[in-house]
Length: 361
Image (cartoon, rainbow, N blue to C red; front, side, top):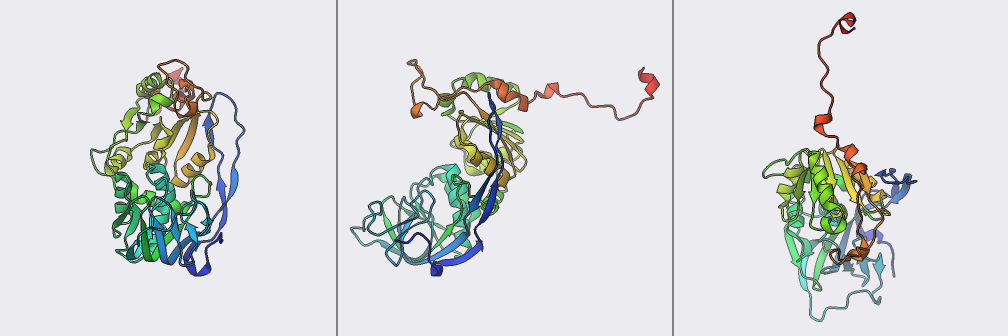
């Protein structure tokens, strides 16, 4: 069993392994939190070229010519032996064959944030060592927004769908290895696809400079969701529901945003489409892991201040059905409203001309 790639499998290594800095999270909470910065090891960014590889749909795994199972995504084991229990079984029928391809199958690719931060940088890195027109093998269930992002970032590479459990034999497989958000090992180079996406917005135009990104899950997660929404809209926040919006329309709606309140943390990927310098305020339950937010904010050129609600608890009444293991919390509006002052409370402009001091007495 191997746990590292072989030297002949590495086509290029743009950046070696190095130390990285994770800044101290910015937090607005009901009690003091002792948080500091971190120093982490960022892995080397590598482009792989594997010969006679076997891809499995729905998993970030491939079987190499040596018969080993190699993990191409961080949510998979690093390397599985051919006899490992978690390794896919040999296909009952001969797999389909293709001359060359880019590995794009992975668990969690249906999640927009995971796709944007973990999978898309790997695909862009792998495409740099592949010829134009090389297809990208993706899961057949890949959502529309992810497909649109690939069309924007990698326009010269068509998509080849692979169903869950299906296998595909590839003569030359191109893959990329980068950091991951959960491991705090993302690098500045991983944010390069964001620049291409931010410039691809089209549609009705910007929604406003102060936005509230809402989802159906918000009313189940935040106990005082209705009151919180009313208070934020009174401060000029325009409520947006991103579900169902085409990717160009999402980008266009966020192109002029300066302050974004994330009522659902799962919308983090949408907030990253906002311009550099935007301030983001995710609503999180007490006890949440905050360093991934500060890392991504620094790399994306944004500022994130986490608004922590009360500790998660279970809803006791019948109309409050327990869900998601009790991850329900309440947000005190006094923790976020000071960051969003009412425009009418702004001081008047000072006169541009000067007056003698005696005239003011």
